[in-house]
Length: 393
Ligand SMILES: Cc1ncc(COP(=O)(O)O)c(C=O)c1O
Figure (tube, rainbow, N blue to C red):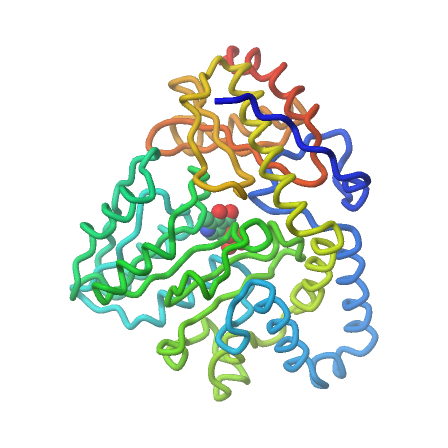
């Protein structure tokens, strides 16, 4: 394996953000970071709302939301009229799960790479309906072919009512071959819900090319939208069955308006989301993707080297655009979620570096991201100081 080289920095990119310059922000994946121009765009919308709340909510807001949704769906390659804006991926997953009409004896199939809150949502929906949740173990090093094979063998046609898979996993930073998985599930008549929380902005794969029954992704991570902006895309055969979590005035309008209009809320994050895409496009979408993935790969290598982890033990993310990278931590560290959270907080406090520490299947992992505001020396500083911190157990 050749040593990855850091990419050319994108000049001035750090100044687009209001991030604390005293901290290395190496975990864009969890909550994103909103560029200053996007924050300003949202503030202008809030000013408009506060200048005349009645007019803001009653004169054309539903149309403005629809217009915004079409813009965002177009960028993601999703059907603009078969998609709905929702607050976040967690909400989109909940909308889908409770619209499936699960019954006793049905099964929800997912994998052990799934996001924790999504697993909790599946468990609750199963408790509510009498369905059962089954989780397929998938080895971290599984190839795309092996992964599809494991899923094919795990489907129970007639019982499996939905398969939930991630496009890019959170805890294991692994790209799943979602289009192939959807193809196999379709052969067996099993609908697929793709949790694409990290995809918008980072991955170029279009929503349409995956062909899932349901797909939901956050624009507030890698597409620079204000927090609270996600898109739920639904295949035509399901749209009439999709129910919102909260019934409000657009209920009779059907999908997507009934899902989007959730009574009195601050909808300015959605309306300002196109400013996030504007930022991404101004920097150059391909340039940003290539920069972030290369920087994450460099960060993974430099920190792994400092921890004495040989390159062969570094998980392959599975695609050239993946801007999240994992490094295994020494055995015994971050073996539980609580221990992982405590270590993450300790690294933040002691090393002025925000990272993600993951606990997956009883093993601890450091997850690093690359973003336009990061530079190679931030990973090098972490690499220089992390071994000593980890040694003080
Ligand atoms: C794979 C995955 N699914 C779901 C979520 C939840 O996203 P949100 O908190 O925006 O709903 C995340 C957040 O990091 C994630 O990584």
